[in-house]
Length: 247
View (tube, rainbow, N blue to C red):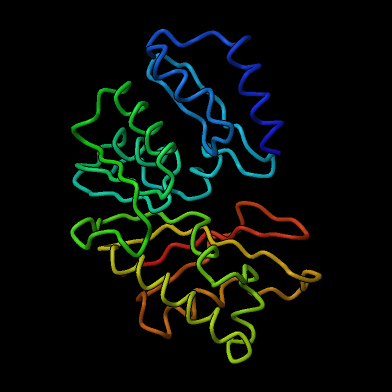
């Protein structure tokens, strides 16, 4: 897939017109990155579309699933696993007093900074290359988003339903899940907007109880209340569940 996407990057460079708002240096920093998980919305109306697996939902559609408030005035915001910064920039545009994004991939953070500069909101946002467990506690925010991140921290087992259905058998993965979710909750002052992946290592059960994950978080005292809001994506091999988790 990487070779195909690299060739697509070169093709886009040859055939697409550079947005006037971007310098050639910044444009090349974006267009030559073979994988971009989020569309880049620029203030002149230009959109540089995502370039990744077609199965990954466009962030504009995901934003609607999350039901993020239109008005974030007076709120601080943190996106854990922010990729190219789509949700951080949206939060700043919706009035957040300050919005941060963290990702472990430096090239994605570089792109996020370029887009923020184009919007002239550098004083309202901050991006840093850091992993979840290294995010400083002072970066805690009123509103936190953590989208399709924590299943990668299960110790290699991405089958969330298998783990929570049999926590004794999959004790290590279950503990890893609790540790990751607790780390996110510790950075949350008010609410976490979650997208949690359920990848199936065998045939998908017809009886998947997505709300069970939230109940576990409540029972463990990680969150006061968790609402399962539905699926942003669904297939035979993977589902992405949306939760609103309140501190």
